[in-house]
Length: 169
Length: 330
Image (cartoon, rainbow over all chains, first blue to last red):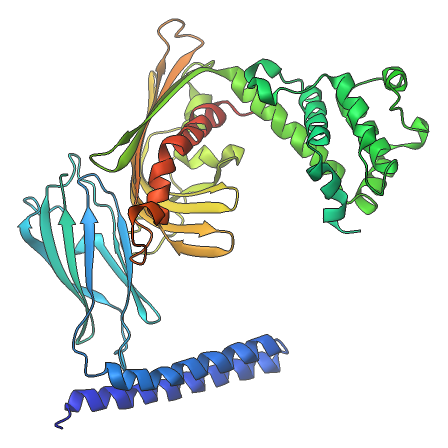
C-alpha cells in the first residue's frame, strides 16, 4: 500500500503534540506543587486527560486517511440576527494557529452587495471543536434569500466547509 | 439541624405557606385586588392563627419567633396578638438582637431574608402603582418561526431626565430583577467583548453595543445588542437588535447562545390624555431561537424549539419587566 507522506507526518506530529502536552502539564503541575495548590482531584484529572489524548492517537491512525471535512449548514430566515454552530474537527494533528474564514460569498442570490460577508463570520477553536458564529446579520429590510458558501481553515489545512441558506419561507 | 430540616415543614404544608405569604403580603401593604382569586392572601388574623400550628421539632420556638417577627413587620400590637393567642411568651425579652441571634443560630433564617422579601414586595407594589393599564399581546409567526410581542403601558411620569435615565439601556439592570447586568461595550466584531468606559452621560442619546445578562431562576442568557438610544424632550426611543448571542447557562452548565433573532423597539411619548404627568410606553420585540443541536431528531424534542413554543408565554414576563419595573421601580 502506498502511504501518503502527509498522513505519516500527521500521525507522527500527533505524538509530538502529545509530548508537548505532557511537558506543559508537567510544568503546570510543578508550579502548583511548589505553591501547595495541587490536589489529588487534579492529579486524577490530569492523568485521565492525558490517557484520553493518548488513546485518541490510535483512533487518529484510522481517521488519518479520511480526507473529508465537515460541512456546516446554516438555515436562516431573513430577519435572523445571529446563529451559532459547533462541529468536531478532530484529525491526527491540527496545525498551530487560529481558524480563519478563507472566503464567504454568495453562490445564488444573497443580495447586492452581499448581505453576509466574512466580516459577519466568527470562527474559533475549542479543543477538537470548531465554533462558527454568524453575527450582526440583520440589514434594515431583512436579508435577501440566497445561498452562500465558504471555507474555514487552520494554516494550510481546510477544517470545515460552510453553507448558509437564507430562506423567505 | 440542616437548613432543609428547618424549611421542610413549611414546604410540606400548603396552608402554612399560604399563611406566611399572607402575612408578608399584608405587612408590605399590598392590595389583593391585583391577584387572581386562587392566589389571594387569607385575612391577617387567620394567618396568625395558622402560623403557630407549624409542626416541626422546633415548635413552639419557631412559631413564636415567626409570629413575633411577622407581627413586628405588620405593625400588629401585642393586644391583638394576645387576643388571637399568638403573643410571644415574654415580649420584652425579644429585642432585635436576640431575635436575630435565635433566627440565625437556631432556625437558620436570617432576619435579612424577611426584610428582603418585604422590600422586594414593596418595590414591586410601588412599580405597579406608577405603571398602570398594561396591555400585552404576543403572537407566534408560524411562517418565520418567530414570536412577536407588542406591549403598552401608562407611566405616571412625564418624559424628562428621570425617565430618560431609567430607560437608557445601560441602566436596565438598576432594579436587578430580570436584568442582572447591562453595560456598554466596545465593537465586538473581532469576537472579544470589552467594557467601554467614558460613554455619554446616562439618559442622553447614544448609539453602540450593549452587553446584557438576564437571569430567571437557574437560567441565564448573555447577549450583545446593537443599540440606538434616542433621548429627546418629547420622545424617548430605544431601537435594538441582537449582534451576537454569547451564551445560555442552565445551572452550572454553559452552552453557546441559542437566540437567533431578538430585535425591536421601546418608545415613550407623552400620553394624549394628560401629557404633563403621564407617558405612554410602547414595546415591540421579535425573538426566534435556533435548534439546540444536530442530535435531536424531531422538532418536538429539540430544546431550542421548546423555547420557541414557549416564547409566546415567556415574552410577556420580559415586557412586564421592561415596561413596568425598569421605568417605575423604587
